[in-house]
Image (cartoon, rainbow, N blue to C red; front, side, top):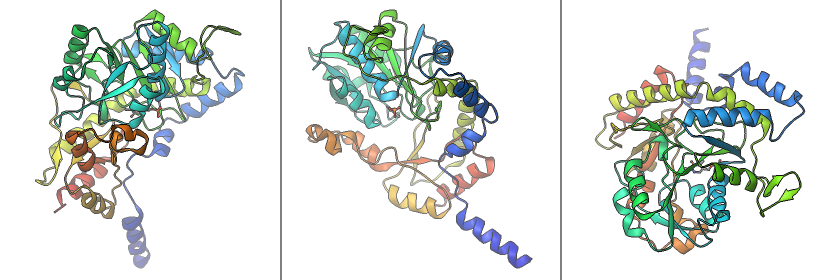
Length: 382
Ligand SMILES: *Cc1c(COP(=O)(O)O)cnc(C)c1O
């Protein structure tokens, strides 16, 4: 018997990994409501552009503090559609420039390119990993039409300064909120700071569907209408087409799932903040650097990044200790083959972040035991 227990313990020691983020467990934690909702959506016989979209759009717009939300197919399309809608309004033209942070999920930048706009890469600050407001003005040209801040890792970009610069130069501000559902800056939610915002409901985001999904929030009625039309092959009424649009719709099942999960978003984000708070209290290792927390914003910790020049060795050490980590991201966008025309840019801060970043497990479901195990392993790294 004892032998058996020791054996089990060894198996447990060797095979129990603290997952980076277990989607299976997240889904299970929404049962039985999740399955009931899916069953209702299935049995309704109506799968696109119906009541579930209407309800979710209303609730998510309310949540963000905007007049409108339009459900679309994914986060990248949400960003593209905003630019395509501005082009349809005559506010922007193909070839116009958009200032983007150089360190972001590449989807931000591809979303701009897919809308025939030109991304202009701006360095972040090392303190926030978000776009550096002080570096934006030097990049503005006669063709610049918008600034696209990304609230990376769940931390709101310096929106007050960004909005001020945009006003001064008559630029639009489009927020990429894919990692920051519910984050606030000076009490105001992301998605309501800019002229429009794109959200992703990719499964592992803070508010995630069971597949692809996205949304555009805005207070601009005309823009919201155009995004809706352009996401549905440019159709303003059935079989009437005013534009060559795309097909990017949020389906009814995903909208229903998102309505269920939206109800728990605030408490899940609060739990993420508690995990982060414990990481901040507990992690103390001269080899490892954490971002200084800010007083202005309420971070929703989509990702908890730590930094060390010895990132690969640290990741191996944590794997050995039974802790799964990820890197966000291993290759900077301008270093990707897809964006080779930007390869000559000198972006040392962006490259440093990409070289040193490692993401610790972060989930509302982490137990205190898991958190302490992570802290202990990080502190033991030599
Ligand atoms: C996930 C993500 C996107 C893309 O969202 P999809 O729904 O996968 O298209 C865009 N920008 C950022 C910052 C993201 O993290």
